[in-house]
Image 1: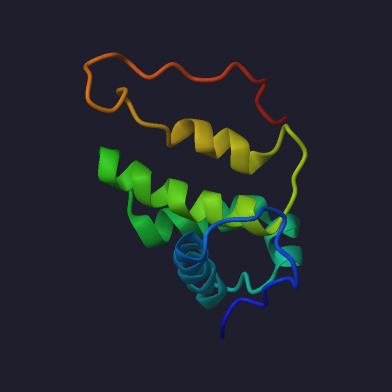
Image 2: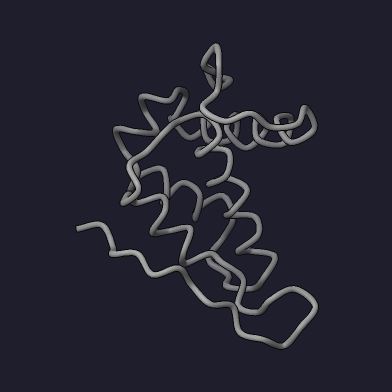
Length: 113
């Protein structure tokens, strides 16, 4: 069952990016999250589905895969600044700045209660 895309996504992206995001959202639809309402209603379950799809590893490629799913979610729907998806995004950021050995610095935002 494919994802039921809104007529106009929340953000505008390039067609190539939209194609990648659509594939990620279609994968979530296979796990029972087939529209924006489902993504908004059950963020903890969606995050668990992302973990199930991408595995439990904590390598840079694993984190990168998870960020693609989260970016796709942020593409189709607007969420408050403090939300579970953003909190999970912060857990999936890179450990180092690309091309350097500098540690990645997280944004300071209060966790979702």
